[in-house]
Image (cartoon, rainbow, N blue to C red; front, top):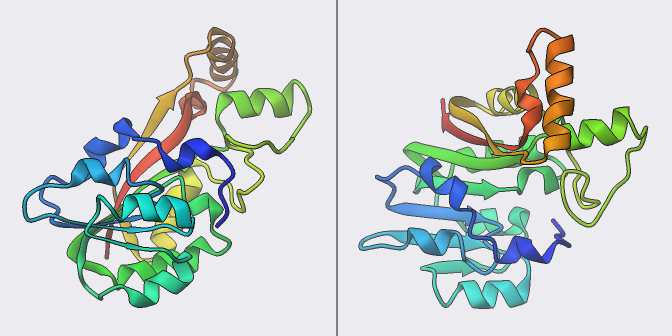
Length: 215
């Protein structure tokens, strides 16, 4: 998993905090960057772990967190205790994984009995993306965003639900986040929804936040 967007390493992702169970005592963030997000979860009797392949970011994160593994996910997962974490966080990580199905199946064994996966996943049907494909007739990769050149996989709300189901999870909550603020894209989304009987409200959201429990 290679990340080019430097904001990835220092984003606090405030919009994802409500999706973290308040009862969680053992927390793991995969792709924790410098620990700015999961560092907000530190509290009394709470262990916050991180996995971060970028060495410089991992060194900063380990000053805040209980433990940080400076490894790629495939290597780090072998070092994690089984049946241990109350929540495993993957904020904008799944799309960077070559085989996310295998990784999610492996992570099931690391969750406690009532543990959950919390994830933020880009929505390929986001209206800005659709505008460029349908109007500009262009699918061009970039340094960041949905068409980040380091993304291996692309998801819609429907395929996110399918992904977790196939990996042995049940969705407890899925919600669109980071709604477009652009008037141009809002109007384009309205047009699409009028044409298709208001069945495309998902296009307004840049990402989907998911909480999934292992079955």
